[in-house]
Image (cartoon, rainbow, N blue to C red; front, side, top):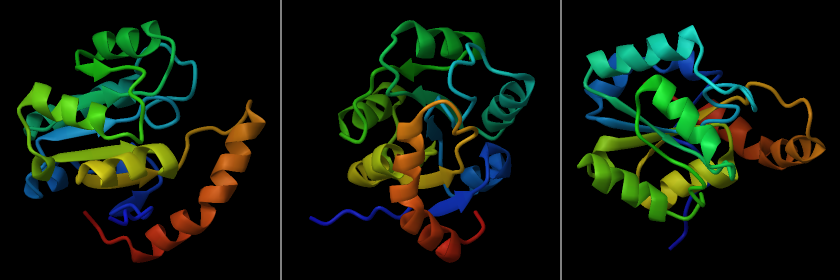
Length: 169
């Protein structure tokens, strides 16, 4: 079975994802990558912008769930607890196992679930493998790791195509 590397939707940041639009699509569970999607790498706790967006999601019946590949177990735990949301750390994306585990834990189906992330080969590919709606955002900050520049360069054609084909939520 072929799986697309194209996200269903693309935008600059999570601020462009309207909670009411997700709710209209029937989304009840929004899985979110942590690093470079919600906050820059290394930021230990959510800022006011992320807190407000999470509260707005909840007002529209959408639960935020942090799904992070971060290998430091304390990082996604501390961030998620500060935000008051569930999480899975060291998720192993793009393998779909953690996606299924999150959906089962929250009592949601693939049709009721979406993922937002900044990386095509982990977040988007994993979401597509799990059969859920995928939202691609630009990385918050690339500085600090040369490998990130290379990874995003390889992703560029897929990002460009996704942006061109993306429709409003």
